[in-house]
Length: 161
Image (cartoon, rainbow, N blue to C red; front, side, top):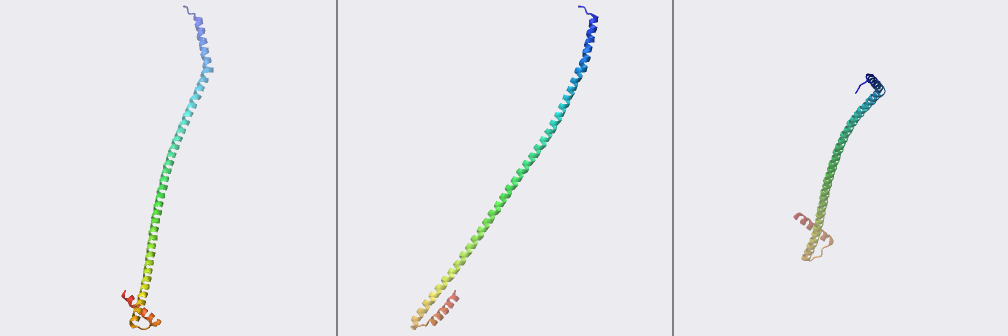
């Protein structure tokens, strides 16, 4: 194998020219494209990081809103329970008051009826006593005498009780 020095020099020159042309027309555009792609990736990463941070903030905000809503719902439930308990107590109190009024009214009615019955019994006893006294005396009693005797008897019976 024989190496021709002239061919070797021309091959080296061709190779160097090819390298220079590739460097000028291919290497710089490739580097520029790679730099642009690198910048785009960095930009996308920073955008993604910002979006991730924003999403985490929104998640925390939603968690807080949910906790607030639960707290508010519990407060509403507690308030409704308290209002229901107050209403129940009020209704029970009103029922007791109404029952006491009804009992008092019934007692008053019983007292009046008792007084009325006692009055009627007194009148009847007085009439019977006067009639008995009239028979005993065997005299005729006038209406005025009868009423006078009834009043006197009722006064005496009233004093006894």
